[in-house]
Amino acid sequence: MNLLLQTWPWYVAGPIIALVTFLLFYFGKHLGVSSNLETLCSMEGAGKFTDYFKIDWRARKWNLVFILGLIAGGFITSQWMTPNEKMDLNPKTIENLQEFGITDAGYAYLPEKIYGLDQLSDVKNLLFLLLGGVLVGFGARYAGGCTSGHGIVGLSNFAWASYVSVAGFFIGGLLMTWFILPFLIKLL
Image 1: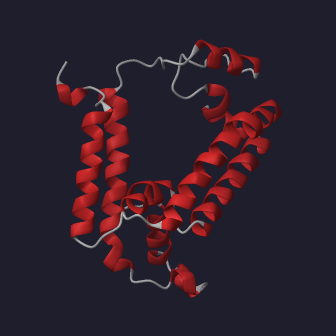
Image 2 (image 1 turned 90 degrees about the horizontal axis):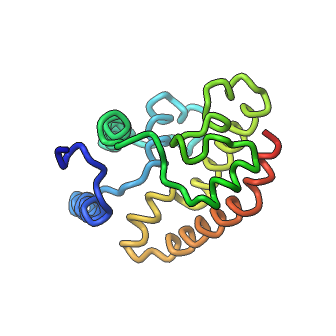
């Protein structure tokens, strides 16, 4: 199989991320996904309702190209670079997920019990999605950026706020994985 049509290992993808980050620094730009939401909201006139969105979105439109690249990259990867639909998971993880009723864990990248389109017809699931979106949005703004912005750009700039934020992301991820998510899955 052609190298371009295979999943790239970390030692190829990592230096590419570093190169992109360096180029962004060189041109005075910052990488981050949550800032794209600010740009989109500003484009759509949200500055009429709150000063937070009164920004020059035209100066940030390069960010939208970045998001389009993420979408295109995700599509290309899912269509032509995914070797198979089965995900390699630890058997213990599969066993734990099966206890919560997720029977296709390890057989699909996105288990139907959580990510199936039929889940959108359940009001309870929609409330979980809405609450999760609000919490992620609030967290990204409260932390002054998202995981990609702090984890890639902030850490490479030696920003103290990014060290604190990334530590918080990991602690939050561990708490979610071991304590909160098992409780929420039972509610589904």
